[in-house]
Image (cartoon, rainbow, N blue to C red):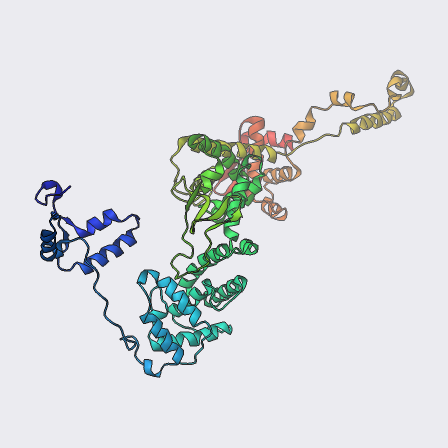
Length: 554
């Protein structure tokens, strides 16, 4: 079917758009490359124009001559012959023979899309070469041998000699990248384990001088372990990832965890570092207990709301996503695996299928930020506990979830009430000793009675200590009343009534005035529904209405 160029449906379309539509791989970088290649060749006309193809042989031949510029493909022009003595190759005449041969390989290098393979082959060719010159500066993105001039090439091979000896001079970062690329491709080494140690040594040597290098090295060393199957080094190079996976396993049983373990696990995962807060530093035990309780109370609400377990809410849903091996590095291996699976943990593994790598792990976040769930719970717990304890440094609210906020406040209130109950002094009476006291009292009484009185009360003198049941029934009423205050509190109240030196007494027993007065007032609130001691300009004052009450109690 012939297309009419004048028809609206067949209007002229830019060639670059046609190329993008025909490109079978939806990778933007590939599309850009194809577009640039075609635009360079089609300098005479940058638009695709539909032409009617004649079927007559002679007419077709004439059309080819007249409309050659309108076809959507033009054979590329033959590249100009390149000689060894190019712009970058200044000083080639004085270069060693192997350097000259390497430059010749540059000129024979095929299309740039296979530059990684060319670099690999060139690196193998130069694997045993060494040099000894003064090192000159060098800076290039994704550097390879071809990026260097003669002086830089000789400088690199001089540096490589030093690096292989374990010497790490201060040099340009681009030189180090080239050497690392060689190690990743196993150039000059036979054992992947040795290559991994070389990468570790480079990281240790340049951690301070070249911090940008470390960011890449950490990822590349992990990929190195995976690519070459160094499973015995997984624990060393995936320490943080395995710790995260272990924490996820612990969280699965959060309801049965102790308060300390749950709090410690949550702080490791949480985005909010509650252990750095002022309240935790002052009351670590209380914060640990309260935070663990609020987590156990609040998490079920989120689980029901989102339909996922806590470990998925905190660390993400399971997903297999592409993982380009040695990303951002110039890397090539002719023996790269086609099918391979490396397990890091039950929750994380690397999969190679058809030569393409992917990572299978829990990484698709439900919340915008990592571990935002536990971070919100801990932050709100910290904020509300500060209010309940009347501490300084209040915090601004971040949570806007009334249901969860109410649950957190309930847990805080219950904890503080429980702690107040536990702080009350526990008075215990040994009822077994009351019988002995009664028996001894009877003997003393008999010794004081006359014979006539003794005769009357003789049955009572024959009494022996009985069990505790009778003693319980005859327990004096005043026992509990007299035991309302502790010995220290009674002594403090006595000094307060007599205007004694109560300050020295509190100092000797290492008791803050606030703690003493609060303890006494809490007890009297239970007993008489009122406080006993008021604060008058920082000095405790006994209320006159209860002066007789205090005297009676102490």
